[in-house]
Length: 177
Ligand code: IMP
Ligand code: MG
Image (cartoon, rainbow, N blue to C red; front, side, top):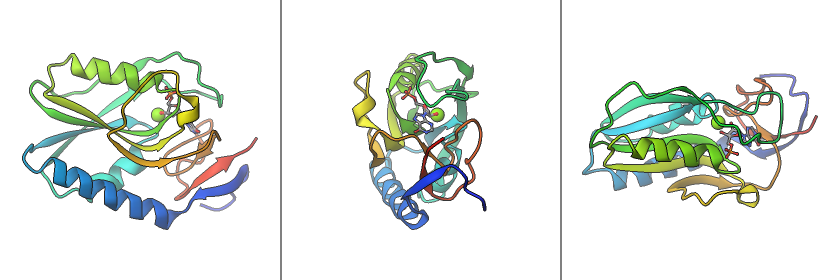
C-alpha cells in the first residue's frame, strides 16, 4: 500500500513479523501435538492478518472460528465498553482453544472474552496476541503466546486500524494524527 499518511515511524517491519509468527507457530505446534484438532479463534477484525499467517505455519489439525468485539471506533483511547457483536459458531465443549488477538492494551476485552469462552465447557483456553502494551494494563491477563511487547503508542498496520484505515499495511507503524 502506498501513501502512508499519518505513519510517524515503522515499529516492526515485515520481515520481523514473519520471523516471529514462525516462532509462535512452532511453539503452538509443539504444545498441542497431542491435543488435535485444536480450535483457533480469530478476534475480528484486527487479528485477521496475523491469524491468517499464523495458522498456515502451524503443523497440526486446526479448526477455525471467529468472534467480533466492539472496537474503539474513531478514538485512540479505550472506552472500556466491550460488546460482543459475533459469537463463535461451533460447539466448544471439551475442546482445546487458542484465542488469537491483535493487541492487548488495557486487557479489558480479552478478560471478558476468555471468561465467556471458559463458560462454554472448553477443556482449555489459551491466549495468543501479536502485541502487548503492558504499561496500559487495567486487569491482570495471561498472554500464553506473545509476539512483541511495545511501548504506549497507538499502532496500526498488519490488521490494526485507526478508524478502519491502515489494516492492509504489511508492517506495524506508529500512528500520529
Ligand atoms: P483492550 O480491551 O484495551 O485491551 O483493547 C484491545 C483492543 O483495542 C484491541 O483488540 C484493538 O482493537 C484496540 N487497540 C488497542 N490498542 C490499539 C492500538 O495501538 N492500535 C489499534 N488498535 C488498538
Ligand atoms: Mg481487536
